[in-house]
Length: 323
Image (tube, rainbow, N blue to C red; front, side, top):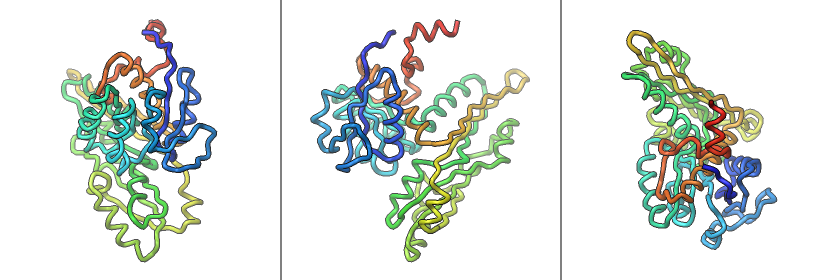
């Protein structure tokens, strides 16, 4: 397969992820940035900015929209509306709701001849692919996923949506003991909740802090039932010590192959989480646009996408490079 037609891409939302996506779309040889949809009238960019409520007017000019929206509320509330108008790609990271999100997006996209790529960050996303591939290698696999040490975009966004929170970041911290147990093949009893703890650093008025703390630690799917601590700091301390966005993680899979133990480990060390998340989103945007052109409509997860569709390099050349 040779892809020659350029992909016309747009961005919805212009936070950390949206800014990273803009930078990376501009770096692609096969993509053009049509513009950015925002509810704000003025953005710090030289790209065209369109009001979010004018999206329908641009439907014929765009091949794929990258939904750079928050997972806590924006994606659940807005993503299907975008899928009715465009082929889309999102980085929705609420693991428990991915099946429901896929079903909702499938209905919206299929009814309008569009393609919706869902959950395309690194977890869910690249880790999802690695878990499936590694687990398939072993008759009886033991698998553990670890996140961190780092700042989670989705969880930080969820905290910032709590009323009264002025600024916030959430750090995910894996257990060293759990990591070593997984590598030895002794991770059968490890769960995500026991292998990690979550630390939230937030800025809020003192009178609001206890209510906010309770609302965070009991938030389903994001913090409950993890061991979670919430620290409140001043604006000055937050700006000095909590502005970076590193992250990372690993998937460790072990299995017995007839008496020999084998381990597959996939790991990421990210200096800036939004940049890498956007990189995955841009690659899957390429795949979504190509799939839509070939008549594949509806919603798809990363598990349903042929790897060559992610690359700007033609398939024949990719195959030749591996000979």
